[in-house]
Structure formats: structure tokens, C-alpha cells
Image 1 (cartoon, rainbow, N blue to C red):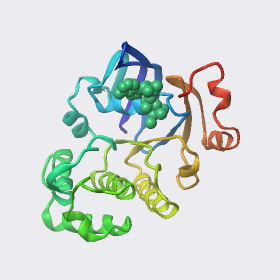
Image 2 (image 1 turned 120 degrees about the vertical axis):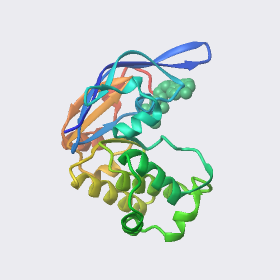
Image 3 (image 1 turned 90 degrees about the vertical axis):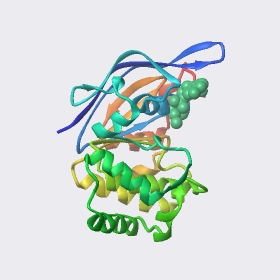
Image 4 (image 1 turned 30 degrees about the vertical axis):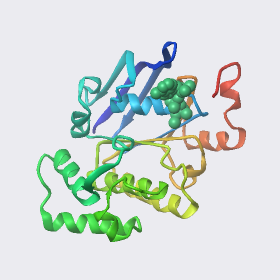
Length: 254
Ligand SMILES: Nc1ncnc2c1ncn2[C@@H]1O[C@H](COP(=O)(O)OP(=O)(O)O)[C@@H](O)[C@H]1O
Ligand SMILES: [Mg+2]
């Protein structure tokens, strides 16, 4: 079983007036097959955690470790992270002119599996996954992220997740900007991947709404750059009722 292990992670971001420490000692272990939700107020550093694991150049790791099966993730290039089995939903947020969704998916699958998927089975795989996500087949011929609506971006993310079957997937605010129907379709996709038992999921979200569709095994409250409390799914219910106030008192929440 693959394990993503984050130990005492400290991260600064280059801001005007110098570097600012955003992550102040994050500890978290995600095993293949587990679903973890990270919840917290805006500005608490949730996306910074995702970007840091993704290897975004704006974020400097000043302390701590991130390993996947004991391998140092922080030493890997972005491509190596993907090949090692890490899926980061924000990894390809940009438009890729001239590259169709279908080509992009096949190239990614080839990189992750170490060989090109057989064309006949691959076409079927893509078709099935797209039907399950209620995506128009014409979508496969569009250029990656070019003019995608919010909902299309999220469906494209989940399509990648279903086809690439990573060891650990990090989904940052996958629920934001989705209407109820899209949220349900996207959640069902995450649940299908989860039922395979092969993927560990780190679901980062501000709202408790998506957790009505996806029941996490673990919930972590993120506040002021670290995990303030961890628990089971019941912790999300508590947050839904009480909000984050108890965690941000005396601290800054942007
Ligand atoms: N690239 C950046 N440049 C400057 N400040 C940043 C950058 N990324 C994050 N921050 C700051 O770090 C803090 C945490 O942001 P973020 O990780 O996006 O929080 P969250 O995702 O929990 O809302 C905020 O105060 C934000 O302004
Ligand atoms: Mg964020």
C-alpha cells in the first residue's frame, strides 16, 4: 500500500516585503484507499499545501519532508511526481493550445503506466469514463482548458483521475463553482475511484457541502498553517454547525 507522508512541513511564499511563512509544521499521512478531507477557513494555507506538494516554484520548502513510499517527493521534478503516482488536480491549470483532451489523456496515461495503453481498450476506457461523468463525446476533441467552464474543468479533472488511477490524488476545491447536479456527478466520480481501493484522496475544501456526497474516513481542520484538529466524518458535521470560529480566534483569517 502506497503512503504519502508529510512531516513537519514548513513553507514560505515570496511576497512583497520578503518571504512569509504560510505552512508552520504540517503533519499528515495519507494511505492508498483512504479519503481525507482538509477543511479550513480561507487563507489558512490549504492551497499552499497542495501547491507545495505539486512543486510549484512560488513556494519554498524551508523545513520538513514529503515522501511517497519513502521516496523524497520534494527532490522530484513535477513529471517525476506524476510518474511516482501523485495526481495533483491543479497541476495543469493552464490552457494547452493545440493539445486535445484525448491526446493529453493518452500522453498522461503513457507517462504514468510506463507504456502506451492499447488503442482499442483505451478508446473504450475513455468513452466509458466520459459517459459516467455525463460528458459530451465532442469534449475529447477540444483543446485542454481552452474556454472550459468551471464545471467542465472539474469534470476534466475527475476524468483524468478515473483514467490515470494515481496512488494519491490531491483535489483542491474541486467543489467550488459547481451547481448541485455537477457536484453530484463529480462526487460520484471520486467515489468510484475510491471504491477501487487503489487511490488515496486528499480532498481540500472550504465548504462542507461536498461531504454530503463523499464521506471521508478522516477530517482535518486546517488553521493558520497547520492541522489544528483531526477526527472522523463527524468532525465535518460539527464544522457545518459551528463553522471555523473556534479555530481562528486570536489568529488571522483572510
Ligand atoms: N503566491 C502567493 N503570493 C503571495 N501570497 C500568497 C501566495 N500564495 C498564498 N499566499 C498567502 O498565503 C496565505 C494562504 O493562502 P492559501 O494557501 O491560498 O489559503 P487557502 O487555500 O486556505 O485559502 C494567504 O494569506 C495568501 O495570501
Ligand atoms: Mg485555496
